Length: 367
Ligand SMILES: O=C(O)CCC(=O)C(=O)O
Ligand SMILES: [Fe+2]
Image (cartoon, rainbow, N blue to C red):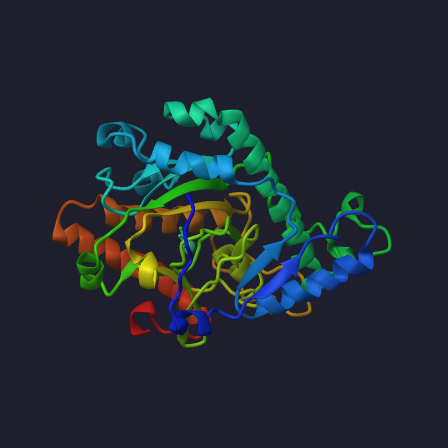
């Protein structure tokens, strides 16, 4: 898909001001470099909660992007036969949408561990090994970001198990990484996402909002630079579009990291709009990796001079929080009656409010 990017001047002047984090020297024997990168990340995550990640080393995502229209152009019956059971049990893997092709829809591929082994459509099976390798690359980069976050948060080396100490480092660099092990049960998934082309009239009826304001539920979200502009980030009281950066990942912090840092890392609200200007009539695709903490991780504070020890505790595990939010999200799609829809909306809003209020936003609907 090639898109002539033609933004109107108003959009171009109001891009969200996001920090770029460059991972070029993150690996190897570059402790000082690593600390410098962590400084950039700190500025981004203590502030906007969103950042642009470059030199991440993940292969070109073209093959993965080519799966989006294939898996989401299956027949309604076929898509619904792979429907996620999220509204019942919080398992987000599989197809999410109404099957019609007229609304936002996605296919989530979960972790490659027995708990998430499921039947898949032919096109996913055909590329299964590539999807697995790609997802593992995403997981590896997500861990690099978490190592940098542990440095940014100055988690003291004394908090490490001895086998995980980094010689000479004053910080427990692997502390947050270790809450996200590849082999553990968690809701990590790679998402193939499609926004169908919608007429200006239909979009106008919902104030041009295609995905309402929300925060993400897990730890870190990494988007493979969707080319069609539509994502907006809330920066103080202004919604601003995110400018595409070829080859980069658009990343944001999720609720889990906000909880375990007592709101120091920001799970920032964002939403998806009708693309501006000439882009409005285009179908939009997105490829997203959602990184999540191991289900059993408690949402308590990490040791850090920046974190109030008592702030994070909400009496839930990361898995319980994510499952609640995923259930509330998908129930809104699955409800049949107006009454059920109202209930589902209320449940969803109540959970979203927990996060917003910790950042001083009373309610999303007030924005
Ligand atoms: O498509 C996008 O740009 C953002 C999607 C999103 O926010 C989400 O799936 O959580
Ligand atoms: Fe999101």
